[in-house]
Image (cartoon, rainbow, N blue to C red; front, side, top):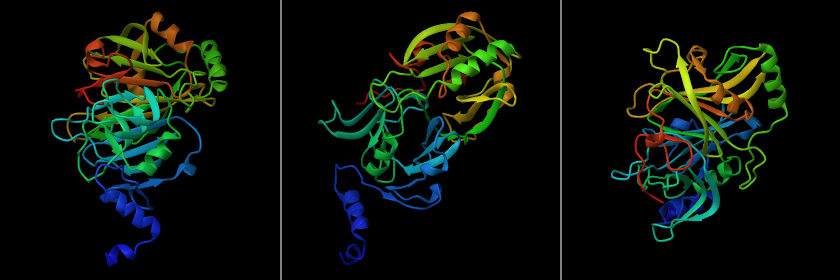
Length: 336
């Protein structure tokens, strides 16, 4: 008890929250290397990038969450993912719903504050207990204070990667339109629209700009366009050098790059199944892909900053995604 008394009032409250069974861990803001964080600790530096598209990476081996805005890491936190028998699914997800005061409909009305839903079957980011190892029923538990900060900047449709390995976002500029031949007049029209179109809003229910994702599967030889979690268009794609894998990559549209008259992207690679290295995404990968006019026309008329382009060598048809919403996963435990 004497050691606890020596703690500051804030530290003591965080210590008590860690020890009370069933309650979310309040958490402790620290100034540390993300890989040195202890259970319940987190970092938060939104001033490093005050604007731009967001992406969240959940590292299962490290039990850590990394938050990037415009390619810069602005936050990191310890987390607790699914325990054996309730493993957290790996893959690429979009936030489908936000609920600040959510309660579980399956587990005794358990509180799940600051819930960002990833699947309709129940996988989500939310505040919870953090014992220092995987202990949830499939969700990604976060410190309460960190989850509150995160909830304030996330928006429906943003990209969340859950993986055994992932790369830090890097800047890539694609000349002209993506997935098509370069036409300067066509790009000029798209650039003008992008400059006046904001990111999807963080406020739940704000439908000013609908979240957008394009999924390209080399296995299907198809591209799929999702708006607000609903499949609205699909079309065939031609992939140059088809015997060479595309890899697992995500490109988040940041906006236009006037110098090259191209589109600026934040690119990330990920590896889902084993803790091996994730391959770096490159411009050469997306330049290999050409989509048919059906998919291109639907995409170009809706493009906005924050749109995600996802490449995979696995099937991306209905068997590999949730009932509603864009998800590419290896497994989808039924939790809520």
